[in-house]
Length: 323
Ligand SMILES: NC(=O)c1ccc[n+]([C@@H]2O[C@H](COP(=O)([O-])OP(=O)(O)OC[C@H]3O[C@@H](n4cnc5c(N)ncnc54)[C@H](OP(=O)(O)O)[C@@H]3O)[C@@H](O)[C@H]2O)c1
Image (cartoon, rainbow, N blue to C red):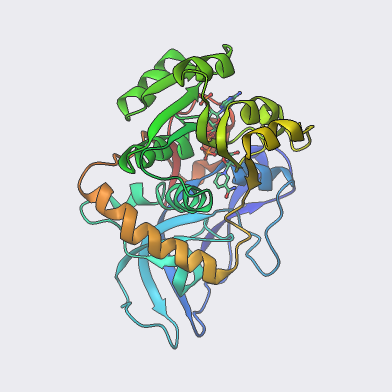
């Protein structure tokens, strides 16, 4: 089968298409014949050598795919060869076939282009699991950093569907406009004094929840932007990993700071998250309440260009590889 190989850690020029043996499904596993793979920021880090796969995972890059069931292992029920499907992975997505624990495979939403689903499943799993983690509830407010990105375009719409007031940040007028179109109540240019804008938009109260993709750079301002009993969940470290935390700001707000990673979760947790996505997100996608993010597609042979595109910061929404 075709796979994307990495000759050595570094730039996109180190990515190439090569060959590898096709996997075989064991007990509890499914082999997916991939038609598309989502490209994620974590893939860029793995290519650079900064984000090795967890123990036992494929060395091949790629965390989410869509396609059809190619093989069904022993003890797996509910699937037949040829069924359309999507999956979240610990690795191995940039390939023609991938071996996946059955719990991480879900049926795609009905009526949606199967290629696009490859760009939906990882963001949906990430956002649902993190909103659950911090108990984001109807009637609350959330600040989503990077509302026009892969995570952000989904998070804005899902939060809106939960009945939450959505504030978001983005880096250009065009991206701010997209955030508003997706349902954000307040869209703030992050080049400006965004903490002041959050304070103004919330009458000085702050927000109940922040979904953060910046990490260290925003820690102080994020905590200062939380309401009483507020929760900050960090899922990205684009602004670094080490910062000073003012504990007085936490205790005066009874606030919580937490951080999660989807990739390293045990299979059982990933299976529960996939089930939640199928149950709670797919109906919203099927009804059109959550629209697909803009996407840029590249054939797998142009994987280096796909990485350059995401790395440039110019992309809006998702980058997808097609096979
Ligand atoms: N922990 C997990 O389980 C998990 C899972 C998936 C993704 N992630 C992480 O989540 C982050 C976003 O992923 P993605 O797939 O959405 O990547 P992406 O599509 O490349 O989006 C990156 C986002 O970061 C925003 N951004 C850049 N600089 C910013 C700043 N100074 N202030 C506010 N926002 C800023 C960008 O906004 P503009 O485009 O407007 O500049 C863009 O929306 C990445 O760090 C990724 O590793 C974590």
